[in-house]
Amino acid sequence: MHGTELLADGLQRSFDMLKMTLSDFSDGDMLTRPCPGANHPMWQLGHLLEAEMYFVNDVAPGKIPPLPASVAGKFTKETAKIDDPKAFPTKDELLSAFSKTREATIAWYKTLTPADLDKPTSMPKFAPSIGHLGIMMPIHDMMHMGQFQVARRKLGKPVMF
Image 1 (tube, rainbow, N blue to C red):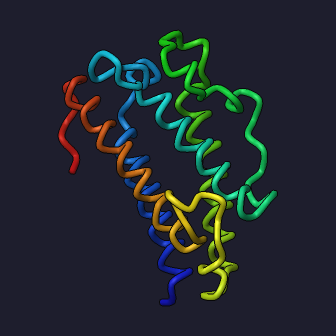
Image 2: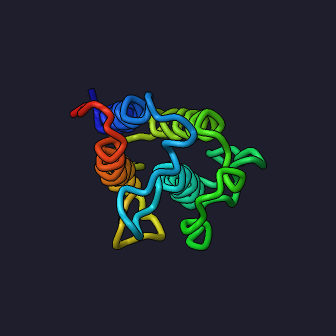
């Protein structure tokens, strides 16, 4: 296995863990704030989706398809404070859009050569190269997954990991 295959595999594995973590969340559960001032899982999941779309399209324009209207633009700093379920898509809509985005990201990584991984991004502090970006997206997933785990505990759901 070479580096691009390993990065694609890491992206798939982190997404699989994310889906497992949220598998027993209802749409109502997705709006649970683990503590005052924390973002709810719905907003965090949408943030992950929109961030990935931005990251990949920034270095490879058009590789990630546009988001459906029910999802696009719903996860901004301003919407992070909203708890109204009408302001957001359903969990299933959001996961469906994220699945398509992650599939496109993985497909793109599988087309890269080892030399492509050294190409720079416009985000030198977050991910200075395309290779670093392939590492940082699953790390970003995992950081938010830790927050999902806190919401799980607040909701009395079983400990998963």
